[in-house]
Image (cartoon, rainbow, N blue to C red):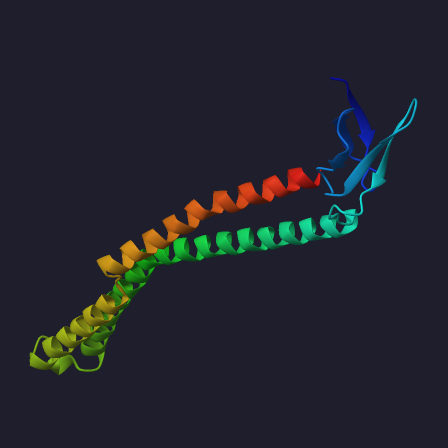
Length: 179
């Protein structure tokens, strides 16, 4: 069986065909052709009955799909970074809140040592100190992420990270198809 190679009239891609076929479709642009033979030549003529598309339309559609996938990849990466920052930010928030509690204790000590020296070491001093510590701890507990919230953040990040290679593979496949 003799195989010959011709160029697609629409997109100039190589088309390999055997001399026994009557119809051929370009793999790159999808155009359908009827194979006509004469004594020493083989020609491709557009087939009327076979659905064919313009090369530029297919290329434009391919570009739109690639751009859409790149946007989805960028969004996924952004979402991954947001979830990571929320996971790491929880420890930072706890540190800042506990620093605020110690700052409040120092302010109470400074006020009682300088302005309310008569009450220093008395009931009001310890009540104010206890109030600052309790309010600080209550505020600190609100900042803490629960175990369910931490697990949900980790699951969200894991799901996003697992989906990213699929999107990248689809984009790479379309880029190879475009070339």
